Image 1 (cartoon, rainbow, N blue to C red):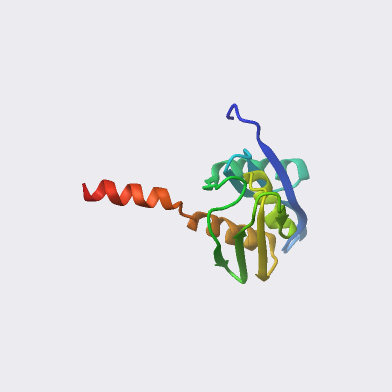
Image 2: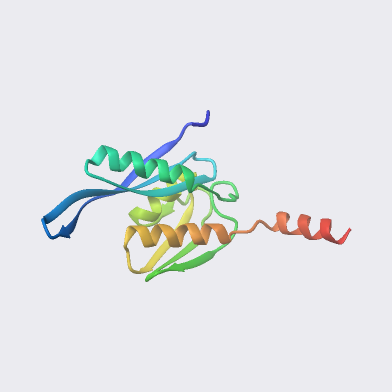
Length: 157
């Protein structure tokens, strides 16, 4: 859609079944992350009877659900944690050159987002959808100190 190069990573493809009176209906669920590598990323879940179609639907949903993440160089400005369902995620900034210490689900999301140096821990459930939701929730909590000061000074004058 945009002129910026987009990164796409398929995190999981799972065969799911719906049990009906007539038997079992088979379909596929794809969990996909999409990002521009410059602080914008999103994830989506697609379901279809064929794998490529499920991936396409997941990418489409991921593009719609993109969030803007404030970056400080190649890391995040401050520590943040969040919980979604039974999954808890802790994100801590790391010094330049440290690298990414994260599980596969969080790693994929942060990679497409453009974050290179970070320390992450996933506690509780490791269900990919819950972990991604907790990660997005945590990244939305991040505030840059300069932005807060500018908005408060504008309101007072």
